[in-house]
Amino acid sequence: MNDLPKTSQLSARDQRQEVLLSVRGVQKTYASAAGSVEAVRDLTFELRRGELACIVGPSGAGKTTLLKIIAGLLEPTSGEVVLEGKRVTGPPRTMAVVFQEYGRSLFPWLTVQGNVELPLKNAKVPAAERQRRVAEALEAVGLDQAHRRYPWQLSGGMQQRVAIARAVAYEPHILLMDEPFAAVDAQTRADLEDLVRDIWHRLGVTVLFVTHDIDESVYLGERVLVLSSSPTVVQEDVTIDLPDERNQLETRSTPRFAELRLHIHEQIQLAKAGLVPAQIAAGVR
Image 1 (cartoon, rainbow, N blue to C red):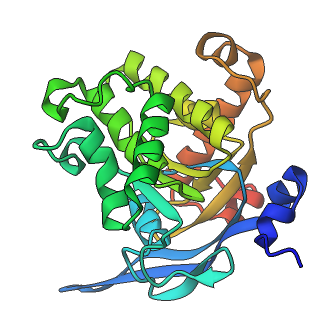
Image 2 (tube, rainbow, N blue to C red):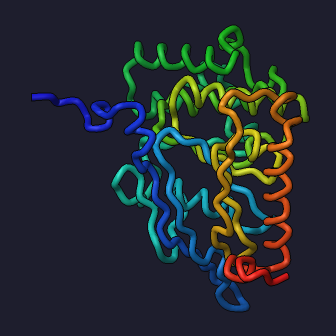
């Protein structure tokens, strides 16, 4: 009898067709002194295993709220999030999250190695296995020679690499990233974008990347989910039909990159104008 998990028996192609994450009719309403405020109205989409998708939308569109709901950190008012066939009711063990405020997530009294290893200790991963995972994660983000240094001795970009390594070492099935590069300079941001695509290719992890940067979403993703203004729905699901092999100079200079960037920019402007998908389809301006 074959006792291997079902997913390990699937071919790579079959796994890519398998739905890993389902967001089904998610709504979030907050109570306020002026009454209830509907932040997210009806969000529905799916992610296949091994996919890299980005989420963009106007400021205040509920991107972070959505990510917190997916991560099990916030309960939806209605609807559900299903990960690998199980409803999310709290932080899933097969999910890792990288936030924008990476500096606050690192412990200054721990070395780089200690910061990456901490979640594995909390999960009671055996010592030898922890050492293997930490070493591989630090090598993957180019920090294998910095394991004895402390966060305060590192640049902002290197600190974010530590946060990414910590998530990678956890060996998640899905990695959520909430505007993780917003606080770094342009060159560091480009390097980190390439790092994410490299890790995605090497590890085959599913990535859901939230960003306010349209260019970043087109460069990184296989898909871009454009959110409407609050109360939020998915305004458009854009397929990014660029070659899989990408680099900052050549990819960003192609006509197709410019077309995709313009299209998503137009969608966000329509969202800012308060138009819902039905109105957009009907040609309302």
